[in-house]
Amino acid sequence: MKVLHINQSDLSGGAAIAGYRLHQGLLGQGADSRLLVWRPKTISDRVDYAARLAILDKLTAPITQQLGLYYINKLGTFTIPKHSFYKNADVLNFHVLHGGSRGYFNYLAIPSLTKRKPAVFTFHDMWSFTGHCAYSYDCDRWKRGCGKCPDLNIYPAIPKDNTHIEWKLKNWAYSHSNLTIVTPSRWLCEQAKQSMLNRFEIHHIPNGINTEVYQPLESQQCKSVLNIPTGKTVLMFAATNLAEKRKGGDLLLKALQSLP
Image 1 (cartoon, rainbow, N blue to C red):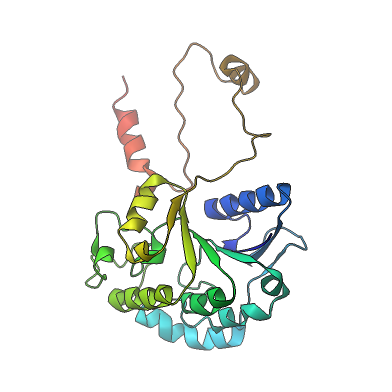
Image 2: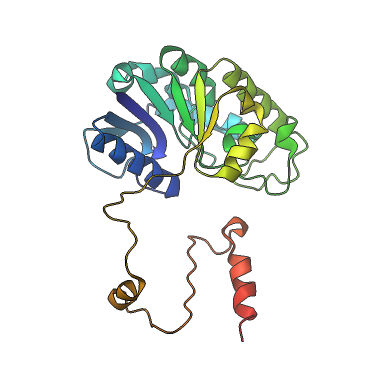
């Protein structure tokens, strides 16, 4: 099996690391796995830059960005079929297809890419079925077509509310695509089933890890190796950005303030 992953990076960010672990797992199972990414961090003959037309992208970006319709100017995506990784692939695996206001991938190319090759679309957030945001928080307008967005500043922030148009464009693209949807969490699976993507099969498959590296060990031994005090309650919190509400930094602060 020859698999081509398309992702924003190979190792920069949580979704990239999850995708790279999947890539390594497939190699370990004898599959021929390769990556096309926007920001490569590894030097490998199995990792290459995603296609782009830099000059054209630069000329058209101010227009699409001002309209709040990110990424549809990335015409280089339509040249991916010329890449040897694509030509040799049996199946595609899309991961994160967005990236701030700049981005790298034009979602309008999904129909043409999946016409030749079936694709798995692994979600790492909600962006694929909303009018602009990666997480909608309390808003459920993505179920009905977006528009009148309550928060244009949610990542990826947009300057103008054309969320209904973007929702319609995504819906059109998916209606002409050959996709199977995978979500790493049950919560995201349930969200996807209520979205425009409910026309496809949707599967919950947790992110994989290398079980030779990550495995259960005796807790006292682990504490000794890591110099963690025994006989005490130890709290751990991890987040790249404590100010990001979705990461729960506000809940951490509230929890710490409630300690005796």
